[in-house]
Image 1: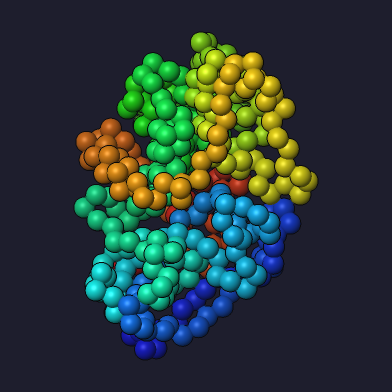
Image 2: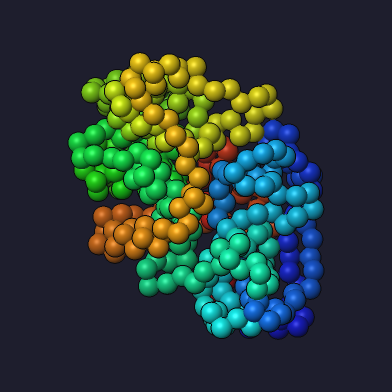
Length: 345
């Protein structure tokens, strides 16, 4: 057990706003003494951090759904940790928790920041630590509410999911199958496509690296697309828009293909297809559904337990590897939900 009186908190801070791909000089490695919580506060030791495409947007200056990470601040990240000191009756030493921990080994939460940071206890009986960062965590909640609230799937409809082997995509596809839909994934590489079909139960998967997405959609969606869950934006979004049905729903979750662009992000060229087909395109920001997370967790934990849903994580060890590991998201190297292991339990 670490002696907190002498423990050092290693941190990674944003040193500069990246232009294009984040580089080593955009990060600052710092350390500071671990501080005990004051009345009502909680100290958490980080076990695992969630690495998500949204982190790239958080580094940019400008108006968004959440304020940017400030220069010199610890990089924002959600994670799973264990309470190591508490002066709050709602949290006991040894409790497993989920929160915005930041890219650091210890996170201190004064009483007035607990709610803002989303510090909540998790139930290890419902899933593993890494599953609580995947299907039971922010990606799973994004997939669930994006599909169910925005997409409103009906049995027999055709659902297309880009980034199908990623954290959000794997949840969306499996959930759509459970709800009785035909599901076609779009992913990069034969291994990912094989996995989403053979392991996750998608009806088909289009390998965008090996062939034409347009041809793949013609083959696997002969009756058109009713719901498109978009994680990538760019050319793939444009292509899917040419195949949508009347009253189709397009869920805009992310645009990972454009996050590191040094030129202005462009909108879809084929947006008039929305007009012709009386279709709807709507964004999903998961934080809007925070008061209902527990309902989605309960439902999907049941699917995990009965085997109808699987959860794959790509775990990389070591806080110091964060800058390089983050870049796996933008090159498509991760296979499943990308997680950084910071400490052993």
